[in-house]
Length: 539
Image (cartoon, rainbow, N blue to C red; front, side, top):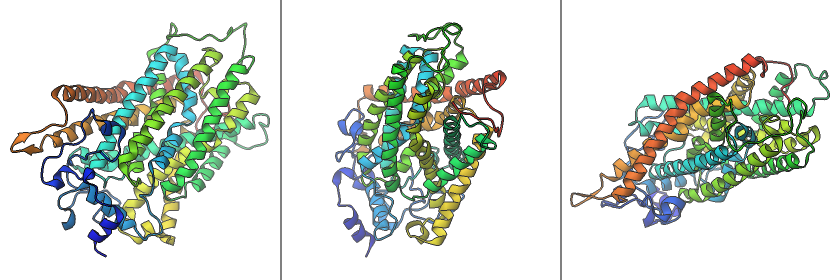
């Protein structure tokens, strides 16, 4: 069967999906103020590409990185719909298919990524920033991440061959290989750091639950970290997001129960853990930062909030496995609204009842022992699954490039499964090592946010906006330039994206400085353990 026949069977032609370049005439992309540009759906108009098709879709690609190549003869127009249709057609009949996620399943992946353990760092952030700035920054960061995620989504619609943020990095910087390599390094480091964070927190949970039996386990934290890494590796083995989305749904539900219990327990307990009215007094909460709050502490608190919201690094991989990528905003809006509500309520209530004096990060440590153990236990699925999710994203990044155009990619073969398992094993070994070398929680969140989120949360998407708008202006009718928005709208959105790029640069410079200073202060005060420590890191 020819590609054209397979294409017709895979995806019926939808005029609303056809890109401008394939129509041979001007076709305005969705206006920045239109309903579809914010909420998606079948009326979305796809704008022109910013560059040639990356050969990760159509040509042999080595593990060293992609380049660009000539588009096959049947896709000379660079039509986005044709590329998407071919991807689906090529998977037909194979045992393992990747473009299978509905928007509901994608929403489950988003919920499992964002409704996570990092929520329990919000009370600590509010205790540093004060309740009013903390809540305002929560809404602000959520709004910025929502907008940049929509820019990312628009980019992926125009370039459906993109499978991960590394492809985007190469395309944004004029198909330069150095951009691909640099993005790939940050991409893998970010994901591995997140895996390490979950190894660290898994060991923290096991130490917390076995705190009454200090001498029974040899080298407690290292042993527990190794156990968590092995369990996560085994849970990482499913090959598609379609399967992981089912596990992710359960993970998000358990996490919601965990933070709900922690919030209720914070209110009903007689006093916070470590309560000492003579030395520390009764819990005090403030609307604004207390006197003596340092810039480093405030910046680290802000970075903690930002880290929890910023997850755009995985979104291209999620969109790349959707049946209809036009529906992605439905999942994004549902998750963002839930985030703002859950994060704000959990952070505020726990902070108010715990106070500045008794706050810990994560906030489970501020609960009395029985409450702490019960609520923390419901976090087990997300401790495992979120690390699994990022491990899977890293593994498919490597796996798809090793086995592009190979039967091992889409069939159950010994070589395919052996390679997939081996890649995952290496990522979890590295995560274990990082977790033992950097044994702290809130400062690790801040460091990750400043180093990686500066690019993947802000800078990339500001640049993507300007690259796409430049491509839009190249469409003309009778030599007359046509735009998708008024000059006023273009000015406002242009200013917004310049501001977003500046936020990213602020994260990268000032944020990195504050994170490093915070880590130095923690070691100076002796509030963190040593490298490969055997001592308990329990709450």
